[in-house]
Length: 135
Image (cartoon, rainbow, N blue to C red; front, top):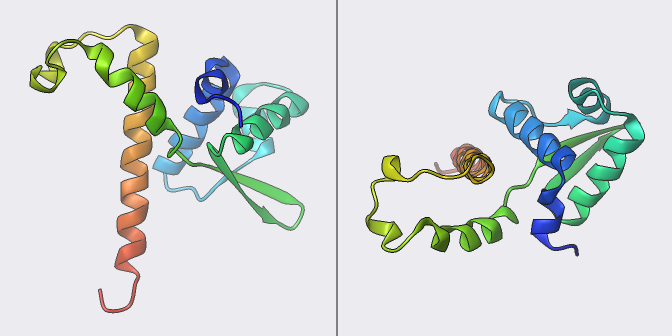
């Protein structure tokens, strides 16, 4: 498996992850390749190539319905990025006022993606648990 940092270093892959996150936040259960192509204005072969890399890194999951494939974000592997990034927030990062921390734009974007993914995963888990018998 490719290093997670190599995987998310590519701007197109980050754009795909952001799109999947946004669509999941809007309640969609998956996004088709054609929707991704349309939204990003990128060719289908390019999107498919990047989706393969994201699949192999376990950052996306795929659901097949007939001849269509629907992709969803799987944010778990981004925990490694979060674990690596936190120590760089400074001495005593646990004691800092989060509003006082200024991150470079790329780090702020990564933090936003991770935060949204975590919130989405939490929501999905809570929804699934509510559907279990006896709840």
